[in-house]
Length: 296
Image (cartoon, rainbow, N blue to C red; front, side):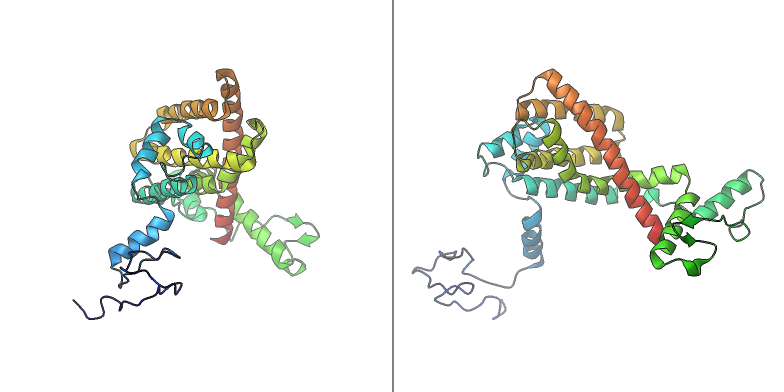
């Protein structure tokens, strides 16, 4: 063993300089840091890093069982103060999203399949397949476009923002419906990250029952955690239709248990929430696709 493998023992904590008891404890009684310090291995560094963001400890499997098989139990347990038995909501959400994005990147049905060809190249390919002469972007007439007081046929009359907006409009116009659909589908999981707090706001509106936004936020964290895991299974096993119905039914049970609703109340709220969520999700994913197209 290297003579520098362990730092020399000192009578005080290296973190807070609190005098340690005798015999020497494993952890500092004042700040909780370990008293036996050594250069960490790569495994220890990864475990420490992931442990701050992803749940890898004992309650994980108990939490996954409750999340998948016992709808609403995790949220109610958190509200009732059982916060050591299960992984905390934010760590559940980060763990599920981490697993999803890693798994999605490794699957052949993952985001790489949605990389499309350049719109001009694709248009020429389609024209060639139809036996039509290719349309050159350079020879195509430029429309007299007007954005506010800016005439796009005279770029010198336009400021930087107007020219950027003109480029966005051009690129958006060149994309086919299938390209928009593919990009929106590829970006939907990222849009789900942005939609998590929005879903909590929808719950506040349609399932409030006197609860604070933070409580709806917890339910939204658990719900999105399940959705990420279900989406990964759906992409990997091509079970979109059946799994969508199962997730909807799971959500209805969770709504009943957390918000104390009857079946009819949970059903109409679930339908309204689902419609609004998917509409907003589509809008967010389309905005992401537009921004990516504008910067491509």
